[in-house]
Length: 123
Image 1 (spheres, helix red, strand yellow):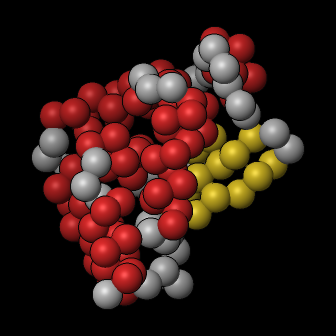
Image 2: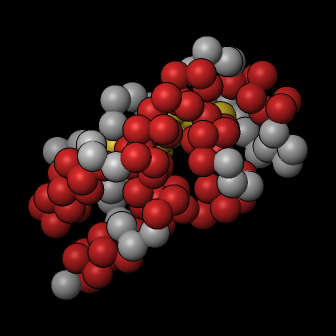
């Protein structure tokens, strides 16, 4: 039951759902997610922590950069099923489509550029 509750909590926030949609096709640096969502770095970091605790995403550090990707097949069944449902729902969502367009522009910038652009970047 604990896994299911963590998964439902993680999916109950629009920003976290948007972040999952961004990670659909590739691993992203925290600053790339911050740029698309338009939220403070600390806020996005907290959202990513909630998603990670629910085992919906995984992370890795590379130097000062934090990277996130969707969970792999070793995640709990509840998390994988909920992730599949969430991503399918995002296919039809206007905000998720706008986020994908914004991500294309963000991916043209280096992580260093994004970090310089963002005040209080912790990457």
